[in-house]
Length: 480
Image (cartoon, rainbow, N blue to C red; front, top):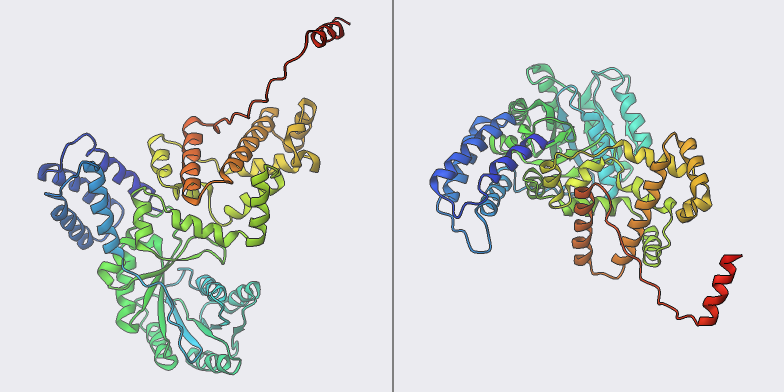
């Protein structure tokens, strides 16, 4: 989402390299470019003025210690101001002591509100809650059908009254049902509306007055830019919002909404939608997002993503295989599928500190189709070949290449990279967590910088001294 802004920030900070200290002249020169970058990212003008003023005041006269460079000091100042701009945010949902906790979802037409309701229900399920979704969108055709389909996928009950056109009554009946069924959370999916539609705005206000929701979230499309700020203002005047959920956060939009809403509308971003799947709703963390914008990575989110995708028991078995160096291609592809579930490989690599900036500096891109080609190659192998790729000779390579529609060089490359990765994992098995993170980061950077995986030398076998008699026998066998 912030690729363009990250590139601009990278160019700006590189101008500080080689300078001995931070002066007023070079700060003001750089901040002019920062201002331009933020405006190009569709950040609200008032936010841009306030942000650049705060950074300028803190940067001018900032002391540069011997262990830091001016560029690093400037990045730290900008990072702190970005965090202040978007946060602090308490992402927790305050569950009430006497259930159910009622959450009202409002939003414009086409913002992805109904899908976000299902994503929020999945989030509540993961927290150990039993949610109920109430279909109050009685204006849009098939809105009830959509919510019921999503509820069936999640195993979450959906309350709907197809014969009624009174959304307030449906809301009241849905909350009553949740209390009778002892459900923990009620998510009210209200009708999508236009902020200038007074009739629908009055309806959602009546629903809020009747249901007395504990949390009111506004669902906003991140691609709307500065207009998202005006939308949040209009809804907040009628509903008194508790937070904002930004959808389509994985799109190529410029990101002005994320940087402007908290400062201008006074309402924090609570969650972000980072994919189409129902498990792709994430808590919003200002410090992590600021790190991504500045190319510093987001190792915490990467670890959390891995923890969500990997089963503990399976992970223990895989770790034992890694320690022994017996991991197979089947194990490798299963873990690859889990890690990339709902995320592109490019996004995952950017979470590794230093890798995102190196990708930009080297003008490198990630071929997302490579994983698909790898799957085709692996599926064309026999179980014995997947268990031990070292047995794949020239004839086997030709057969696998024909079966997957690739070249024999692709088969050789996959086998070589897998064996090298397996050796690396075996080396990492006895390391501490910090050493693993350092080794993994160096491994990824070395791989990308050289366009190939680093090689690993096998332990040399001890030499066995042979007698003169044995040497003579060997020469005779060769001569025959």
